[in-house]
Length: 435
Ligand code: HEC
Ligand code: HEC
Ligand code: HEC
Ligand code: HEC
Ligand code: HEC
Ligand code: HEC
Ligand code: HEC
Ligand code: HEC
Ligand code: HEC
Image 1 (cartoon, rainbow, N blue to C red):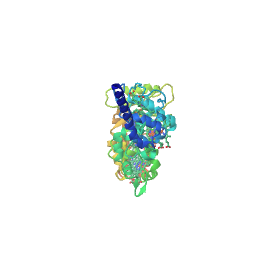
Image 2: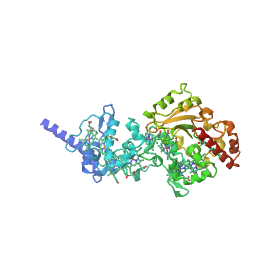
Image 3: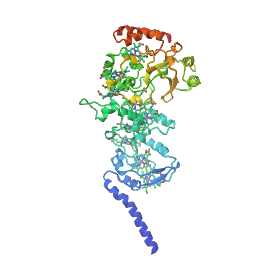
Image 4: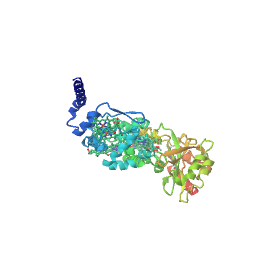
């Protein structure tokens, strides 16, 4: 008798336990399919599982979120294929860590979204994942796993998903002309014109590392066709300036600047990447600056001697470019009225823009790795050869040679033809020298 009662109340307790979540799920009967309701009977509760690294992973799924998710139609086992009907669940299989579990289960996404997966695989993020970087995003880090909305609903407005990790860049972006236009609903002078968000410039899946010198310039120009003309109005050799001066250098007026000399292979027409073939060059780069005060002209010259590797034909030179000193500033784009346009800010002896010099090589994944150099490398006759055609009259290179040109530039545009021609002449001269 006593035992019966106990058993009875136990059964009742079990029934109630089971029913409590079921009752709250009743509202979702229409939206969530029956097999999923079964899973959610347990998984809408505060279940936790202790992982091997000690973390207590929550196993609770918010029913309301899943009900609104695009994947409602495929159901829980559409992704959790290891949980098979009839087989024992919970299996009590040990899980090493949250990341390990996430890595394993993100592989299912590709089974239905092959194209997105293929794009993602080409990205810097995927390359970091392959190298074991646990900070790099997987599908579910950007999309979540259980509350994925249709694109029309998650169209990024407030920085998600990139802002989760790139916090400083997102802040800079939010205050830029583009962020501003977006927060005002893309209404520009009464018209709807879409301003770009992170993924409009960088792509969402095939996010590439910042490697080439003209990174994204084409993307900028695809929206700003008129800019080409606008620059030609006041800037001689505008096309050349666009190539050698990053957009943000003039358009993020607060930014700190640097001249980066990128190791560039003129035969492959691509920046040099670290690889087995160029170990000697890499060693030279690492060893050549023992005092740590930056590569001086002689050290740079030594480094550039015999850059040929493993018999492969190569023609390695340093490609100079004036750019913002850190990636955050690249996003602080301001209104065109604030842009730098005075020639003297660059074409002047000791112009600030030319005091900070780096030499860079690309890592195997395409990201830049920079080494400090002495600003003298820009003006020393010793390094003329290595830095090829990079030549900003007044700002760099041998002063007496510049005097005439600088006079012309600073004196205004009264003689554009004259200094245009001189510029061309010098360029050709430099070109010859660097052969
Ligand atoms: C679109 C694929 C997808 C669907 C559908 C899906 N899951 Fe998941 N689930 C994942 C992924 C991926 C993870 C791994 C964790 C991560 O990366 O966020 C996961 C993790 C989990 C976890 C571990 C805890 C956690 O939140 O990370 C539980 C429990 C879970 N899912 C239950 C469910 C249940 C119950 C359903 C149905 C209501 C469901 N899942 C539907 C993809 C899915
Ligand atoms: C009877 C309650 C119950 C039901 C029904 C249930 N689960 Fe679980 N589930 C659990 C418990 C308890 C754990 C934790 C197991 C552990 O600690 O090892 C778990 C763990 C999980 C995990 C985490 C990974 C793992 O294997 O430990 C996932 C994912 C999951 N369940 C998905 C589902 C899906 C999908 C369904 C429906 C097909 C489902 N569960 C049905 C109780 C349940
Ligand atoms: C770095 C963040 C990020 C990662 C990682 C990511 N996505 Fe996306 N995904 C986005 C963004 C942002 C969008 C919105 C579309 C856009 O801006 O192009 C999107 C859109 C989508 C869409 C909607 C279809 C479309 O193009 O409109 C699908 C499907 C998708 N992603 C699947 C995946 C899959 C599968 C993975 C993993 C292989 C993945 N995503 C990895 C950020 C990411
Ligand atoms: C069993 C197949 C399947 C799996 C596995 C799957 N999805 Fe989906 N996914 C779908 C379907 C079906 C849709 C709805 C498409 C639609 O509404 O046009 C969808 C839609 C999406 C969308 C929104 C697309 C849009 O156009 O707005 C995103 C984002 C997405 N899935 C990401 C993921 C991620 C991330 C994973 C892995 C965690 C995943 N999917 C796993 C089938 C799947
Ligand atoms: C208008 C186009 C544009 C938009 C929008 C944009 N970026 Fe960029 N981003 C660039 C350019 C151009 C560079 C390269 C600057 C350079 O040459 O150093 C860059 C560089 C980066 C870098 C590399 C930074 C480094 O340290 O070198 C990251 C990471 C990045 N962006 C992330 C983001 C994120 C996250 C967002 C959204 C909040 C975003 N970007 C929005 C154009 C854009
Ligand atoms: C889960 C974290 C995470 C999310 C979300 C994320 N990223 Fe990244 N991203 C990283 C990490 C880690 C790196 C490598 C470290 C670095 O260079 O900042 C990286 C690198 C990059 C780079 C290359 C930087 C370089 O030096 O060349 C770009 C560009 C970039 N991310 C853009 C984006 C964009 C655009 C989004 C959104 C669509 C995004 N990221 C979302 C973590 C994230
Ligand atoms: C998707 C289209 C799009 C792309 C790509 C884009 N922009 Fe913009 N940009 C806009 C819009 C829209 C505005 C706001 C227009 C306005 O205020 O007249 C704007 C404004 C600007 C302004 C201020 C112009 C002014 O008249 O004050 C600058 C400078 C600018 N963008 C530079 C860039 C740079 C640099 C890039 C590439 C790294 C870029 N944009 C990429 C759409 C784009
Ligand atoms: C040497 C400095 C400099 C560089 C480099 C530069 N700009 Fe500009 N840009 C300016 C100045 C100054 C103005 C304002 C011109 C005016 O008001 O007539 C301007 C104007 C603009 C405008 C507004 C055009 C209009 O009147 O509608 C856009 C958009 C723009 N630039 C985009 C870019 C992009 C994209 C790049 C890189 C490919 C770039 N700029 C490189 C200095 C520069
Ligand atoms: C933001 C800095 C900056 C501003 C502002 C700027 N320049 Fe330049 N300029 C450069 C750089 C850097 C080079 C060197 C490019 C190279 O050699 O690759 C250069 C090169 C030149 C050359 C040499 C061209 C050649 O073929 O060798 C002339 C001429 C010139 N600039 C004129 C001007 C004039 C005139 C103005 C003002 C209307 C101006 N620049 C504004 C940075 C600037």
